[in-house]
Length: 200
Image (cartoon, rainbow, N blue to C red; front, side):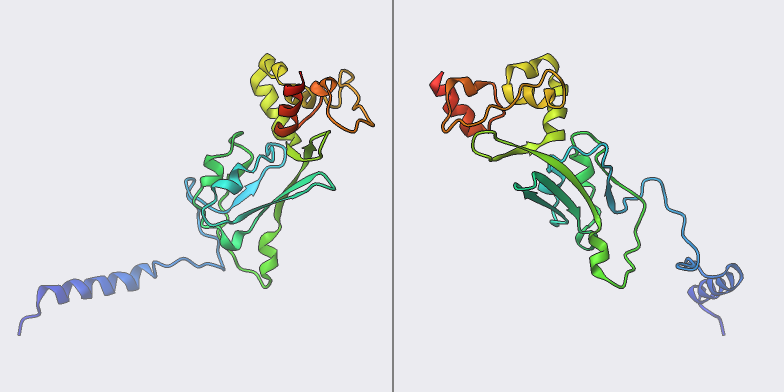
């Protein structure tokens, strides 16, 4: 009786498997070797993040939440790792290219799902001096002004935001009830800036 060739091949594979051992990794007892190109979960780098919210806008799984608190003038960006699909869109669309980066972390083991929402960054907001409307994150506006260089001085809001915290920054006028031509050189939202432009 002859044994078909496929049976011999299977027998050979079985013997080799006994000698070499299993192909599976020993996780979680041993950490596997992660390739350099592996796309793990994202994390913020606070010093490089400008709080623009681009990562939140491009996230296809809504894994990044952006909340603005006008009273405290703070923007909070939070990564919900339990919803992240590690697509890399947040990193690819970050204007600074370093604000949010994908790491090599892949393990979601936890006893509390709330532990997966701890990655967040807070940024100071700049609001309109006339109506209080949120204009944007302070770091984002300053970053834009620096990228524009001398061209930023053509826009009063960018110019004044870049000068905040320096001796050259003008003091905010107080007590005005409605916008006047003198409010041109103030930090204003687009709507208030348009109103001032019509007055001028």
